[in-house]
Length: 336
Length: 252
Image (cartoon, rainbow over all chains, first blue to last red; front, side, top):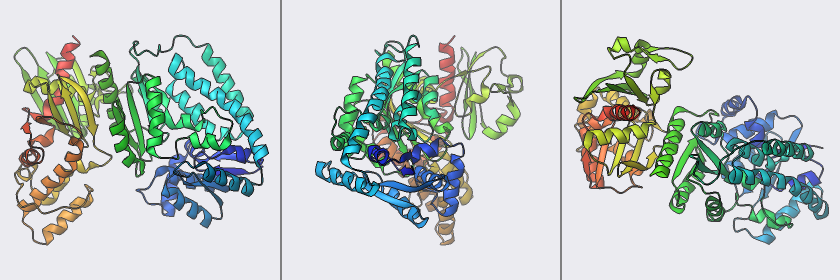
């Protein structure tokens, strides 16, 4: 069993079916206590200062993770910075397997990509399909946590983020991850109260769209002001909340690697369903998605606050000021 | 008597309101203010009111980046809410677009019927803030007030960075450009960086707040660029402090 790094969500069914352990490099980077040092090391190695901190962090994480010599890099459906990362990792002797999500969401092309990945990992459709059934049962538990978040108000924004974002690699151990989800669900059911979910209890209900935050403390900071994230767009997507047993279709419905317009159909449906007051759009400094911010703002009917962070995993005073004012503005609208 | 304190990134402004009206103290340099008037404390610190001749029991509201330094003895209020209340108190207007340019960032606030309808804030760059003008005035050897008088014949500054802009300015001085034209170039540069913030909103009146509103050229260039009536509250840098007084009063 070897560790296989992934730069974003890829069909982990293939990796598990091949008997390997997927490691979502983003999660591995952000959960380390020395993530700041990793970014600095990457800069010392020559990465520009004005470059995505996630890429720099992943670079350091790959080099410092033991027994990790293979990375599946998403080369279409993510950013060109990933291309450059893939190349510099190859220079360092890491085996890189490219994986491309077809921009046009073409079934045959995605199927072909999956097939090639299976060949490269020495597994086949049958065992991948069996693995999918096993993982889907675990994902269903994450979906339940998500449901309880917006419907019953018993789950904090950070908890929702954490369990959904972890679905991207199931923490390298699906059984242990399943136990964790079950334990959490059991504990949540004993919690009392919760938000009524009808906006009448003074809690400001927020949606979080864009890539997961480099500073997860954003969730608790919002809660300290009486606001809660009850929708995490990308993290929810990582849990593949789709009712299909066709592996290819599942990853075609998955919205993150495709066009912003396809993502918007998913976002708009969830915003309506979850009765939100406002939306936070998180963008990473120096990321192309800052341009997509324009489209999001023009398309969404709710107030949008764009939050931009660079490499600090703590919230800075400027960001706190923006969040605080956004929450106070939404609360004012609610009372008007 | 109520007090409003705006602890900005560069300056601290204090307003006092009694039955007669407002009185203003400052602006104080923020670093010097912390050293002299704040009693450090693990729970957030406390203002040495006696040193400032402030009544010890009067209600106080605080805003701005440093407001947590007054963890004890003041009510914390969100900055943009304070700006809205301050604008209403000083101008009597309730429908306008407000542009607040502070020491380290700038924000556009859309006020409708006296409430904040929407806002936009600058990106993670100091080039559209007061700090940019401060750096430039130092490089030009000209104080902020004088630099704010020039808008004609601007020399184009292309750098998007508050630090490299300074280097560029020094280079242009070496090429023999007139200081007035370079000052005009600085004012044009900051307006160019502020306009994208405003472009999302429509309003007939633009209210300028924050210390940068003292800059005459900025006012004139914004009128030209946006065809709006520009209103500057008096004094523009104390708007948030005044708003804090109003919010403190509301809590009485």
